[in-house]
Length: 359
Image (tube, rainbow, N blue to C red; front, side, top):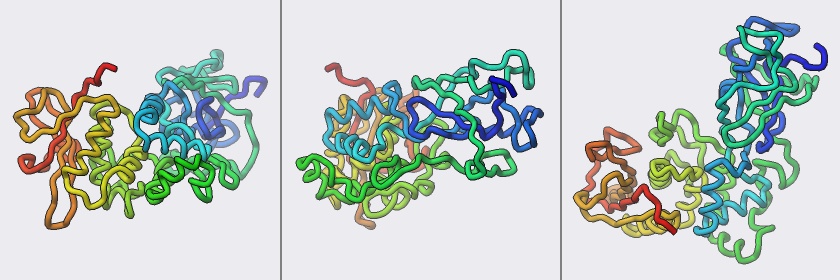
């Protein structure tokens, strides 16, 4: 193929800020030009769409990623998020889960030979991620073990995971998360070991598409059993974490779901009243820089604010949380289920203003 080798489906690439250094490039629909066989169609410069062509690169450490920026801010003001950051460092699992976002086509392409009228990708091609990472093509490796099968739609059947050894690899839990932590931090979380173990599982878990609506709100809790929460999972007992997360999405705070669950596991009093649990949420949002108000009536609610409600379910002995935004007419919309009928007059209410306080 010469010095600038054309790239085919299932070649590998890496991002400078990603933890996975050999992720596959996919092409669900080929351009009709192949190398050796039909399993290896050639790629063109437009094959850069995230989750379609470019798969996620494990964990993203880019400081330009808003989820990492939010995590740094929270770690400085809320102890529980500092624990989350320390856990990631101990486990060599720093950064948020990668969610690549490429806005332009591949560069450094073959401008002489076109596929469907578009430049072909070579081993020197690169594409920029919105969050600052440069994605480049890896040097070709011939290995039968590296090949992954694809389904009939042309989707890669799995994603590569970082290699790991002992207690250090990305996504691999150490034998004891507290063993290598500063004594004062270890003592602080030893009482909440369940929350820590949940976080070890959750930090490398991506939110299933089936759980979200088009705006990124969690609307299908049954699809969230992959996240650990309390003594169970998010599908069975994650009501508070889901409402907490949806409120943060509405506020555009970009806090990872795993961190929200950890905050609830450690800070939310077990078997506490709705009012007691709302105090914990109030403290967290205030520490994040938001102005909050406890409300006794919806008539007192400010325009454009996000609302959290907590209602005690005496029959089941638990507290049910929901989050709300307002439409242009001021009507409240439940973020978990727009059609649900909730008795807000008997609920404990927390109003969160979207504009952060000046510090």
